[in-house]
Image 1 (cartoon, one colour):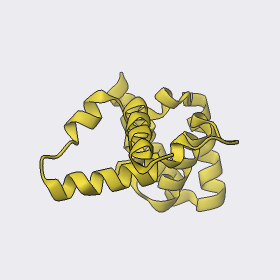
Image 2 (cartoon, rainbow, N blue to C red):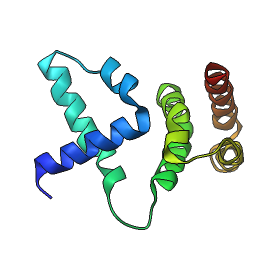
Image 3 (tube, rainbow, N blue to C red):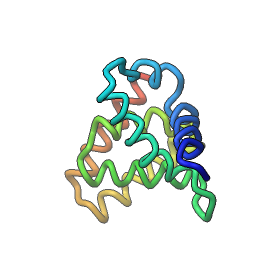
Amino acid sequence: MEPSDRLDAAKAMRRRILGDAYVEATTSSDPAMAELTDFVTETAWGVWTREGALSTRDRSLLVLAMTAALGRTDELRLHLAAAPNAGVTDDEVNELLYQVVAYCGAPAGVSMRRCVEAVRADRA
């Protein structure tokens, strides 16, 4: 795949999962920020477009677990809100919390739980 095709595929995946409103709201007219956004999109979202054993749902669950483990609550909230777009259910997120607590510790799990509650309250 050509570099421009990879970026286009990554942008399409980002838009599919995060939604038009988020993508439009985070589009910058600053050339340096736009370049950084393209780099992050091609790198982080490009991996979502790989063919292979992991589904979009699996990749979403992995991102949720990793962002929780790293304590990246802003990214965690973003991906929790977008998780249904990837086919992740609330029950799966609830169960994922136990995995996070077991392998990353109670602080990471409790922080994730707070994010889950905030995102679900926003959804209501």
